[in-house]
Length: 112
Length: 112
DNA sequence: TAGATAGTTAGCTAAACTTCTAATTATGAG
DNA sequence: CTCATAATTAGAAGTTTAGCTAACTATCTA
Image 1 (cartoon, protein in one colour):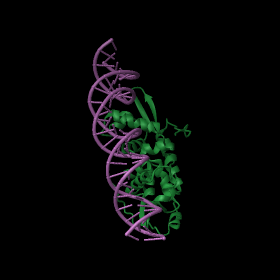
Image 2 (tube, rainbow over the protein chains, first blue to last red):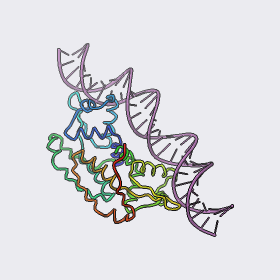
Image 3 (tube, each protein chain N blue to C red):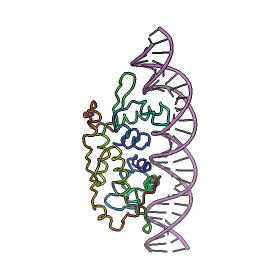
Image 4 (cartoon, rainbow over the protein chains, first blue to last red):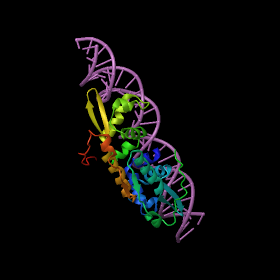
């Protein structure tokens, strides 16, 4: 969970997560939205991957990233709860619908 | 808002916010919960103050910190919303009741 | 006034973070 | 096989961060 908040501390990475909200995107497509070099973006992707916030999948020549909404939601809402912010997420099925091929279900709480 | 997430990226600072959840505490009382020097804690308090997450008030010899729940909630829930996590906070009056002398209402969105 | 207590400021170090360019790996197409 | 494309790894520079000790300021108390 510490890794998640560290990952969220950078504006570029938060932006990446928002872009992935609509569905999976390749590293290149994501990078096109930012004014930094591709290697720099690659580092950001690794931070997000290390925090288990995104899933990476090789698709031919490129790498497609997708958001692990459940992990993000758990971290955000979990922390909110420790503060008495009784948030009640109604995240709905919007995500499952937009990412039909990415069930992102096998996530089993595995960070430090 | 970037300052808020930066502030939240450190475990010690997140812990401080949780301790303040129950009500205001002095710098010393807070510092007693951690295994770091007082100057180090002082820096953490400044980061939290700079992010507008806490309010500091001098009370005689000591400085009493209190949580600005509204700011924290707005950042957390605001970001959650940009991700489609339609969270619906029912933070209730618990805070107002525990901190009767700290209305913490005059917060007007003033960070970079 | 003198001493004790609460915090901060100053100055420093070590580690981590962000970013870059250049070089490398891996895949797809001609 | 060779070239182009997508992305990564490697290495380096500059900045930020977290932590410390020592010294200072401010307040309370005897």
